[in-house]
Length: 206
Image (tube, rainbow, N blue to C red; front, side):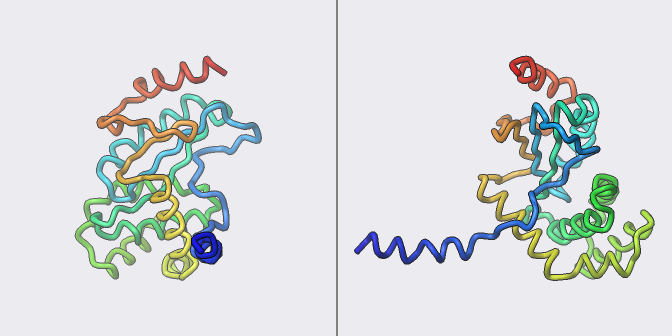
C-alpha cells in the first residue's frame, strides 16, 4: 500500500517542480568557450548591504583570473525582509533580457548605489525609480516596464528563488566554489587577496 501511495505522489512532485527555461544565474564578463577551472557562484541579495559590500570584490576577483580560470555567476536571492527586493530582482531579469546580459552588472551596481532608497519606496515608486535608472542607461522605458511587470519575468524570478531554497541558501551573500558552499561567518568581508589565497591552491591542483 505504501509503495502505491509513493508511486501516485511522484507525478505530483514532478508537476510542481519549477524548471528553469535557461541555466540559472548571470555570468560576468566575456563567456569563454573553454570550461573554466573554477566555478564561482554567489547568491546575492539585490538590496542586501552585505551583498553590496562584497560586489566589487567579486568583480575584481573575476577580472583577476579571467573567464578561462574562473567563471563568476551571480544568482539573485531576494530576502523577504528586504523591501522591494523581489521587484528589483525582476528588474534585473528585465535588463538582462533587453541587453542580452551586456548591462546586467552595470544595472546591479546602479541598484546597489541606490539600495537605501528602494527600502523606503512603495511598489509603484520603486517601479518608477527603476524605470528612471533603466532610461539613464539608454534603455526604452516602455519596454523595460513591460518586461519588469509581466508574468513570465515573475515566474523566472520565482524559479530562481526556489532553486536557492533547494540548495539550502538562507542568507546573502552565500559563496560556492565548484558547487560547494564556502562556509565562514565573515565571508562577505573577505578581500580580493583573501579569496586568492583560497582559489590559488585549487587551481594548483588542476
